[in-house]
Length: 276
Image 1: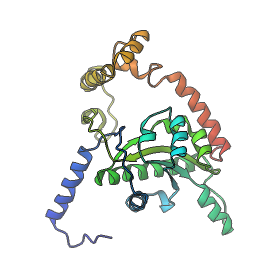
Image 2: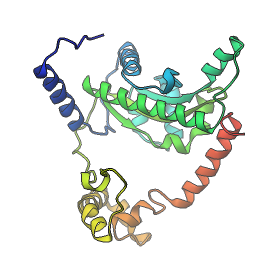
Image 3: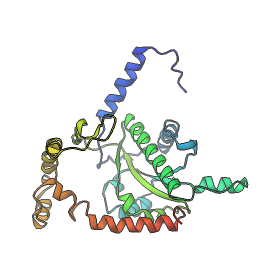
Image 4: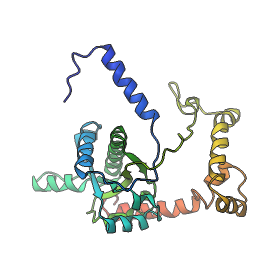
């Protein structure tokens, strides 16, 4: 562990500069070189990330399943809606909210059982996300590329079954990890005024919504239309004329599909011990 007690302002400035550069260089990578990544390196990064992440009550209610076997990745690719990057990247890391291990420890010590409720699910899930983001930055600092897969939330049951997760353990998010084979442009983000609030939440006016979403609407619309004729045809079929319509259309984040998956999640949490 590094002792920073003797460091001066220059050392702190150097660390801050390095971190700023690292965050500015973040990209979601979806194309990877046909080049292996040492499992020991990934494990070392994950271990360092756990020590470098906050954990509620220091309970460490997380597990990470590192999948590299080609057959396993092929199955995971199917579960992640056929995304090619799952096959290209040498590793898929599945971050799980895991209270099973802690409950087993409590049982073996004759302690009162807990951590089988909705609040415990939230604690474990948030710990898993915190760890995933720390690991993502650490992997990127070594020149590796990563991409989060939100499809994990839509296929939690199937992924949990494939990875043989026990009760009180469910996948929360996944990262593909490998050496980048692309250098995409940085994605746009909302301006600070849209999401940094002073003291209390300040509801935006209609004019502020228009102003703060304008650049995102322009760049996002251009990016999706640039995906090619098939995307343009699909948008035209659905009557999509701007980015907001696209985001809640059947082509992207369909509210009807989200409701179905939300109901499935509620049932899954009950089956796996996180709800009565």
